[in-house]
Image 1 (cartoon, helix red, strand yellow):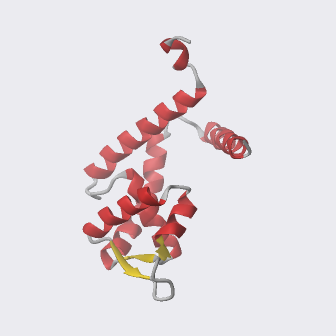
Image 2 (spheres, helix red, strand yellow):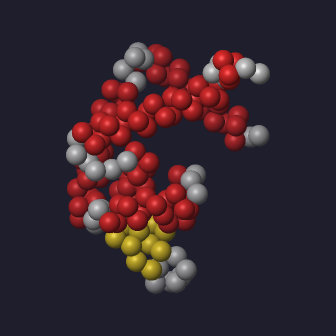
Length: 146
């Protein structure tokens, strides 16, 4: 297989799209002064919508490894957006919740994230967006069944 052939593989096209979304989103988010990286947003928003959770619960909900969630938690905590404490019922667990500043940021992100999504995918009309979502879901289901 030649290098040019790998660029035609769907797997690599999806990876390139993922990188493009992250890079552009990080630039937009930092321009707006949120002081976050895109990979931290899901951690923050899980807590925003679900309330206090253990790091393992966050990792499970996001289908991410615990160490990547821990990096986001440490960074968000150092910026004052999260507060962590030992679970009073299970000393092995660390519970994570939003600080007051984290709740305010969550309010802002909840209001702005759909605008960012629309901006990133403005090249698609409503029908194409619906079809794209259906295709992504179909691929996700198929891959999870492997």
